Amino acid sequence: MLMDEGDANPYLQQEVLSASPARLRWMLIGRAVELCRFVDQLWASGQRTLGNQWLLRIREILGELLDGVKDAQNPLSAPICDFYLYLLQITLEVEQRQDRKRLNVLAELLAIEA
Image (tube, rainbow, N blue to C red; front, side, top):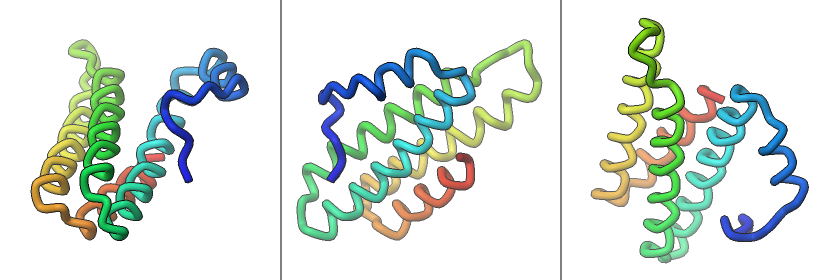
């Protein structure tokens, strides 16, 4: 089972505080993949509402990742921003349709990104 977002883990806190920006991005992406799998398990067991709440956390993570790559001065940031916007669009589709197959596509794309 996943640890609740509010649980204090001193090791993880230290890792986050000392991580490079690239490592932080990798950690966020890994967490989003983990949460996709968790949402799928919740939905499979009929816990739609709880799954939807965790899907919101995935969307927040994608928003954080998008904010981290926005740079009008860097022409290379545009395709990365487009990719994260696409992933955000998938999360909306997943939520609206409660589509587990599309959720797995999201997890696969995030795993490739990691």
